[in-house]
Image 1: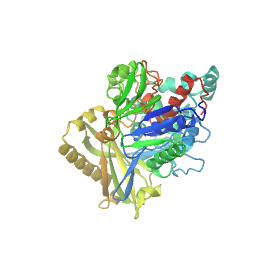
Image 2 (image 1 turned 90 degrees about the vertical axis):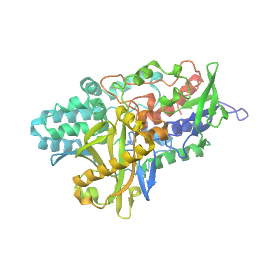
Image 3 (image 1 turned 135 degrees about the horizontal axis):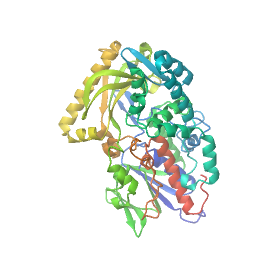
Length: 504
């Protein structure tokens, strides 16, 4: 540690999203001087929202893994200021509802209730339904390890994990290499087939879906009241209170590397900022190719970029409307419901399903007796290429026309809203690309499919001694848990190199 008369070592963080803010907070707690450089005007990266016509639109949190207080991830959220012991969560009792041919099925947070409902819907699927519920129970054991990077684990850490996750290997053995599309075929009921494929892209490995549902059912996937942007602002507040500096509107042009050391960063305005350590938390598509030479890209990551079938990106065409505040109560449905729609071509593919999510559970999304509802139609690499091929004029026209078509389909599914829906906004994969430099507009890391291995980066690159990568792209399928933990891990790797205590 430095004495009061010594210069503090400086950590430069590239990106003011969840990973960057986490890295900043932990680096300050470790005694470093920290400066974050963010190209946008607000913190959060993809964990943000925005206002249209006086309504707030949320871009991120559908559930936040790590809200259960006895988990390692909760400790990280609390340490970074994202959550407190007094944080309130949305009063939701279900994951989502799927409808088909006038029938509906819901994945309730109460697994017993789900089991009884699904068996009543499809008695012929009883054995498979009971197996599904059992494997969701097993999946509750899959808790994100956020205490320290796995390369720093001891034998005791692995033994403890094995004891705590004694049944989860059964999930991986059964569902680790099966896509959701394949899994759905085990059910005879068309409605249950839809239910299993609706929430995540059908190419996802089935275990990802089981873990997602288990997170909700275990009380470890709450939605903090106040929206995604407010959580990011709480983290920014914590960072500043600890003495950190964040510079907005400061895009980074490149990381300067000399003699295997990152000496600092060059900003887009040409100015240079020196650093003792650099933590880039940006999309790896931007990191390798602009900020750094592609020669530094790990081989496994390079292979993922070269194989879109095994490692697809996932994004969405999304539309937001304002409707009567009683919308979901009048429809007697959960907050998220999947519906059949007349075929609609979005991007390069045609869709006959989409969801509608009602946000009336939180006052921040309610105004003058109306609440925000949003829908998302999954987009992947081939759809990104479609949007990218359009001129600016074509892009705006197509986006507007599709928003109108989405509105018609919502009105058909929910006649109550006909004539009263107010259009707020629409966004596409290019929105994420423009705002976050997101590869193919992806708001997650690479999809975990049966065709490729999970991407795991250890954070340090060969050829650069003092650079530590963080961000959701360091561990597929990414998301907020990976982002916030990776910021902590980057700082712990610095401390390990300095032979200091990594408990921060």
